[in-house]
Image 1 (cartoon, rainbow, N blue to C red):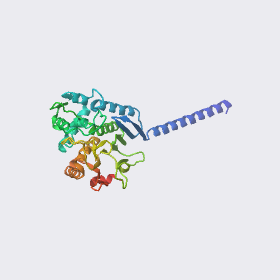
Image 2: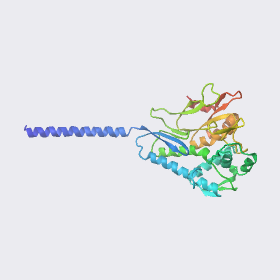
Image 3: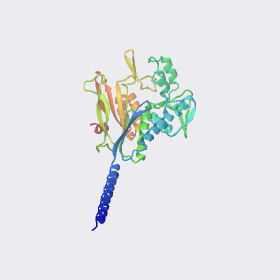
Image 4: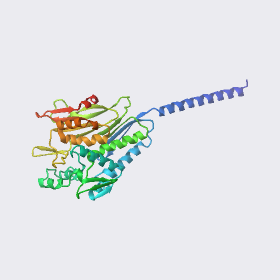
Length: 350
């Protein structure tokens, strides 16, 4: 064998080895690309935070899609941005709804009817007069009784009418505030966006209103925390976490321990009673609701606060078709902080 032939064989063999290594590297790279990994996005939107976690093999465009969802929903439901559909309605007599406003109003009116008006998106004038609205007063205080009576004339879900894609007010001065349901709805929209991208394991959190699907990176169902009092705590200023395990459910919490003001030895929370026009004064600290989707959970946590523990538990027993589970944190008669939950909530708790 000549030296030239030997050299040719060596070079050819080396090339084959290199090609084989390259092919193996390509296979390994392809396999790695197909292995789902945990991706996380965090930011601010709708006046609060959001966190989106998912297991995915391809996250290209997901951040852009999430940002786009917030922008589109804000143009529909935001009270803080001029020209939105909700602000157009509040300033006029009617508005042509997009899919987002229509979905939220439809759920709101259903919730109003089944709760006997305990949930009512026409409370915006009440939120404003009590200082919990878009414009914050320099000094927040209890409004005069005649101001509340005047505002109550514009409050009532029965003053709203849906005709096709049109939302119409039956009485001048009626205004709506969808903040009590919008974040749960937004969580659903983002969850559906991820599902459409073929992602089946995710956790979406918009301001504490969460949707969970599948499992996390450890192949376990998602775990979320609920603020509850530490043992012996009588103030709720030092909450600990109650851990809830979720998969294929949504969970939301409405509480009265953050947005409130004190006057005359009394605490007035941001939860409004549409029937009396009064800001809530009760022993309820918070209500957490588990439901099939975020918009449902978010819609019912506020009315359950208004109902209180006993009436709220009775309501849930009377309406099993809603498939709701609830967890109440409240002050007992002796001033200690206690908790109570539906039997169906217990399996979710660690």
